[in-house]
Length: 152
Image (cartoon, rainbow, N blue to C red; front, top):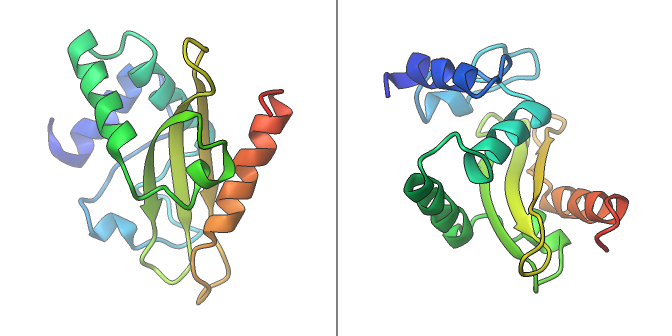
């Protein structure tokens, strides 16, 4: 794919002018609020997730495989998934900063009911240095978003 620069170029093909990858894992987890490298916004990454999981950005078989991986993810059990009904089908990908800022995020494609149009959520947080990631805030935000969309 061309490493970090290749991923940034791929974001641009998705019409995402914001997201960028500059370093590889695990170095990209070293983050501060003033960091410009390895960044995105919830709106940008949510748009990327939408075109990757519900649009034509991927070949159909690749899109299906991505959704299978997202649905199988277990790391988000206390984040977006925890704020939504257990009957909903949810595929997500979490991230957690290892920098001491307690940053945590979760992006998800969500089907409230079988045959329903999917919802996309992207929730990003960071905290005062030294505080742990607050999964409950992410879960509560998911509840508030679903309620605001008239789904709860």
